[in-house]
Image 1 (tube, rainbow, N blue to C red):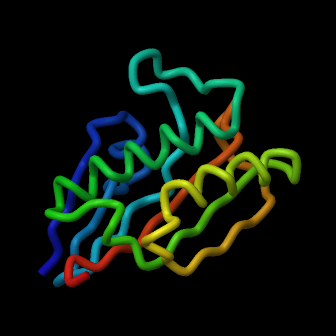
Image 2: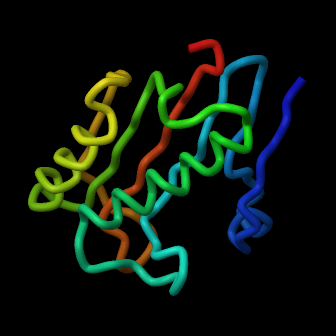
Image 3: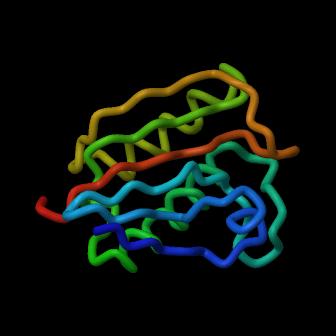
Length: 126
């Protein structure tokens, strides 16, 4: 059985996806960019975008009954090498004691202004 969590953003309906999908005790959180939750704009700073993305992911995980502490896999996409160090520092702060597996890729993100996108898989068993 699948349960879905929606963030209520227009792109979910337009692109046919959910913010998160729960299958058993595993939660798959869609790639999340770092828009400012109050303005909807992207901060210029990649580190702040990473913090915003992780806060949004944590909100979805809490709706599923967990939190970032349940993360077992992180996939991080950044637009260029210059952003990677700032984003890595934020990941180190957040995941220092959690230690999920992690992949970071340098690539284009199809949201103008986005410097980072983060996807998390979490287990509600841990």
